Structure formats: structure tokens, C-alpha cells
Amino acid sequence: METPGVTRTPRRTLRDWLVDTLLFLFAAVLGIVTAAERLGMPDPVTPVLFGLDQLVGVLGCGALWLRRRWPVELALVLVVLSAFSELVGGAMLVALFTVAAHRPVRTTMTIFGLSIFTALVFALVRQGPGETRETLFLLAVALQTAATGWGMLVHHRRRLLETLKETAVRAEAEAQQRVREAIAREIHDVLGHRLSLLSVHAGALEFNPDASPDDVSRAATVIRQSAHQALQDLREVIGVLRAPVEELSRASLDRIRELVAESRRAGMTVHLTMDLDGGAVPGRAGHTGYRIVQEGLTNARKHAPGAEVSVRVSGTEGEWLAIEVRNSVAAPSSPGGTPGQGLAGLAERVQPVGGRLKYGPDGDDAWLLSAWLPWPP
Image 1 (cartoon, helix red, strand yellow):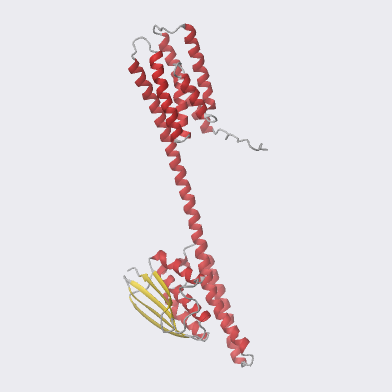
Image 2: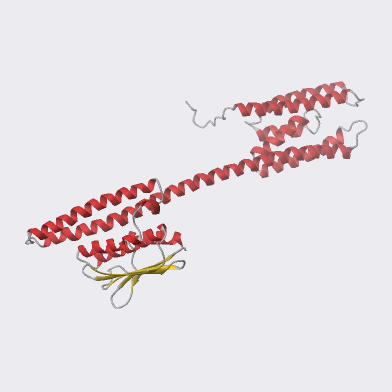
């Protein structure tokens, strides 16, 4: 069990052990080489102080195994000790690298500035024979700058990779959301149209109980066919989970005549005009155009029953595709009201393909739904 309030340090991986071992060896070897050089030259430092320097160097190297848990605290201690201890320099460089790689830039630059000051102090108090203070100071600054710069490079590279990963996760989530929205729009358009047809025929039977057996049979046939077609269309919508909508759905401009015929069988008066100058309309534009006509007919049937409806589809290949659905009696909703989900869904369909959508009263007590879509050559 985890103790509340206690943050557990992540366990080292094999790669972590390898990196920590290499950095420990780097600091230890640097300290040994420096000590050997110091033994080979006359040194004004007393043997006691040199022995103390060696002890500090060994402890500093050993303390590097704690650098992942307390990087800032360890760096501060080693930087301060480096002002007087020559053999702790390797461990101090590793600590500077660790802070730069794992902590914010502000913290890194603060500790780096302190290390520059301690380098100046060391050059003043530990000048050896044949060495100048300027050379000693510049060498220390160069090594500390290299260690800090390398750590900052690692830090920014890690941040970049994390950002790219977050962006990829966000893009995947947005893609999944777009799929869900596409499915919702398809379900609304398909079932809204089919259920409105069912409602019209069922309502006719309800309000005409004296209908002849032939009329009842015809209405029942239409209801059965509409229900069957609704199930077929719903299966197509579910296919959106595996491929783009325009690749699976049979909805296209070629089926607008079939759509109008269904509305006429439901008792609507629909006038259709199609004036297309070019070949077949590409899948996405054709699919969007079909859904616009479908939504227009569904809204007219729901909000303006008995009204005459005119559908006009025109366009030229390589230019624009224009679609208009007008009913003679204005729908109850208006631009000042809250649009239905169907109209909002149409706007979401039209925008990605670079089209425009308008809807609202059109004068003379009429309601107009119009759209302009690009028709690629």
C-alpha cells in the first residue's frame, strides 16, 4: 500500500542504471586523473588538505547516486564545495547537467550563475604552480557551460518529444470526436427523414379510420418499406466507424430523384429541377448535397405540412454547386430563434468542404434553405 502524502520515486530502469553508472565513472575518472596530476607537481597545499580534498571528491562521486531524487539540493552542495575542492569538480559537472536536464531554465541558470562565482573563488584560492588565475577560471567556466548546455539540450529535446506526443494524443481524440459527430449527424439525417415519412403515413391512417382496405394496404406497405430502408441506412451509418462517410454511404446527387419520389408518395408536392453541367459530382460534395436536400424536405414535411416544395440543384463542374430547397409556407422557426440540430449539422457538413449555407424566411411567406458547394473538376 502507498502511504498518503508520500511521493514514491520511480524505480530505475536498465537504461537509468546504465546512464547513472557512466556519469559516476566520468566523475570518478576525472577526479582520479586530477589527483594524479596534482601528485606529480609541487603543491603548496598541505597533505592534510589534499587528503581532505580526496575525501570530499569520493563523497561527491558517491552522492551522484542521489541525483535523481534531489538534483537541485545535490547541485547546490557540490557547487559550494567546488569553490575549495578541486577533486569534486567532476561530480559538480554531473550535478549541473542533471539540473539542466530535469529542472526549469530559471532554476538551471540560478545554479549555473552560482557555479561561475565559485569558479572565480576557486581560481583565487587554489592557484597552483604554473597556472594563472585567468586560465584556471576560463577552463572552469568552459567546462561548466558545456555541462549546463548539454543538459539544457536534453531538457528541451525531452520537452519537444512530450509536446509532440501530447499533440498526437490530442489529434487522435479530436479525430475520434469528429467521427462521433459524423455518426450523430448521419443518424439524425437518416432517421429523421425516415421517421417523418412513417409519421405522415401513420397519421393518415389514424385520422382516416374509414379508409378503404386498398388505402390501408398501400400505407402499410409504405410504412414497412420506410422502416426497412431506415434499418438499411442505419447499417451504412454504423460503417462510418470503419471508413469516411462519403466512401460508405450511398447518399449522392444521383439519388435525389429517389428522395423526391419518396416525399411525393408521402403526399408532398415537390417540384424538382436539376441543371448540372458536367460529369458526376465527387463523393463528398455529392453526399453533402444529398443531405441538404434531405434535411430541407424533412423540415418542410415537419414544419410546413401541405406546402409546395421546390428543389433546385444546379452547377458547373470546376466551379460551384448550388442547392435550394424552398417551401411556400414559412417554417415556424426563424433566424432569430434557435436552429434545429439538423440545420446545425448541415452547417458542420458544409464548412469543411469550403461551402456556404443559408436558411431563413425568403419573403412572400416562404422558407429557403440554400447552399453553395465547391465542385472540383
